[in-house]
Structure formats: structure tokens, C-alpha cells
Image (cartoon, rainbow, N blue to C red):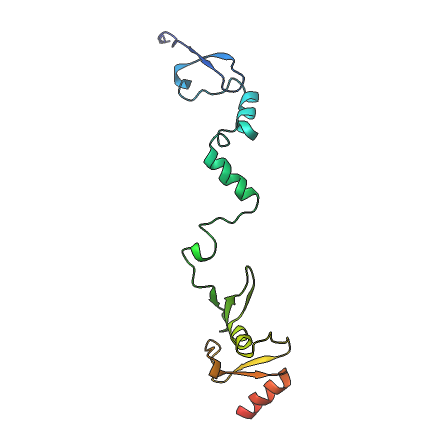
Length: 156
């Protein structure tokens, strides 16, 4: 058997949690922080965590935990913001009306023109048949679905 060289000299280091002095091999000198698994557990959880010692991260984490929106992801500040409009597969355009509410653009425009909220049974008809053309001259209001269907039968 080949002889090994002399054992490396260990150096003393202090645990950052309990302050105990421990002999550490040279390979662990740069990474040594804790003397035991117990101290590691206490040092990486709760208020002793190194993340909690950084005020900027602590403040951000507390805001996110309280339900604050992330400013770089929401609404107008988001990179893909398109004015709150989305087009459905069937052709209608949805617009953002309130904080988390969306409504059909043709209904919102007709409500503004009439100056009142539309009733649930009132139907908005697109005269040219293009569901994304929401100009006021292209929209016609019907009081119920049966009147709307009569208009479709009259056209065809």
C-alpha cells in the first residue's frame, strides 16, 4: 500500500447559529456555517434565514405573501399588454371593464350609446355579420332572442 501524506491541519470555525467552535478540514473552510443538522435547520428556517436578513428581499416576500400583485406581471405594466382586449375563437372581442371583469365589446359600446345597462335578455345584432366589427352603425339592439331570430329569417 502506498503511504498517504500527512493529514491536513484542521482549523477552528464558529457556528453562525449557536457559536460553538468546531475543527474544520481545509476543504470545508469556505462553506462551513453550521456545527450540526440542528443548527442548519434553525439557520435556514424562520427569522434566522439568510433571506430574512436582507431587508429588500424580506419586504418583497412579505408583500407577496399578503397578496400584493407583482408589479411586473399585471395589467398595463406587463410586456404583452394589448389594451385589455382579447379576441375569442368565435370572433367576439372581450374588453376589460373592471378590475377582474370582462364583457363583450359590442355590449359595452351599446350601453354607452344608450346610457344604461343592458338587460340580460337584450341581444345585440351585428348587421354585416362580422362579430369583430363593433362600430355603432353596425350594431342593432333587439329586446329579446325571438325578435333577433325573426331578423335572421328575414335576411335569409
